[in-house]
Image (tube, rainbow, N blue to C red; front, side):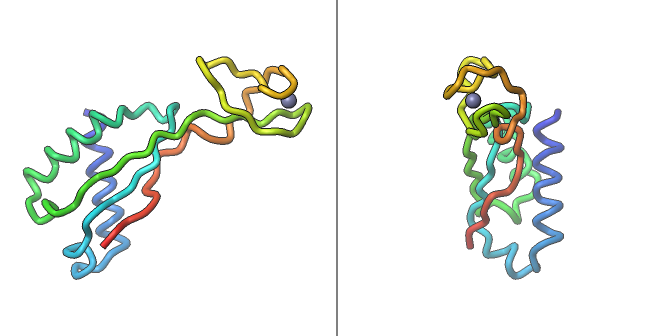
Length: 113
Ligand SMILES: [Zn+2]
């Protein structure tokens, strides 16, 4: 399952970045998930809970996810615009663009103690 291996790598990087004492005090992990990141937040939450069940030392940690919408950059008018319904077209001048600036991210945005 794709989401479970993702949760495993989240905790692997937390263990790498934090000391044992910090890890024990960790209360929340905020993640940014782009619409194009191919990760379903609900499935990620479920995988997170499953991981905590087999790793009770992380029981106190909550996962919060923020969905990041798609934004493209327009090479004609140099503006950024949001993409709705997967129509990759500048909202300012109508020019098609697939220069994606946001919406592909999958990252730990913030951690709380
Ligand atoms: Zn434009």
